[in-house]
Length: 103
Image (cartoon, rainbow, N blue to C red; front, side, top):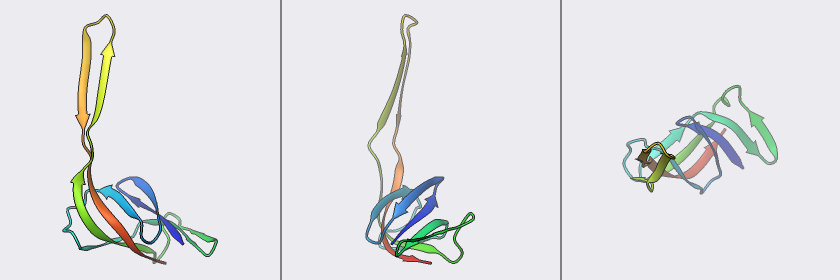
């Protein structure tokens, strides 16, 4: 059994027991989170699609911690122009363990 849900403009595929890095939600560790924007659920080989969301479906999880990912460096250099830019980005995330899929 798995579910496909949306969080922060991105789609995730989750089964019970998975650990996912979702966008930062500013929640305390050990707290429960309910994700209701479920796009599809697969049970016993049957796929239920929503339009856009599956009615009454939700994915429940437990917050493990919050943090920031490794820095990603973007560097652009234009040859012979003495022009270059360097920029860094660190994504803030909430680490969630999926506990149940209802729907």
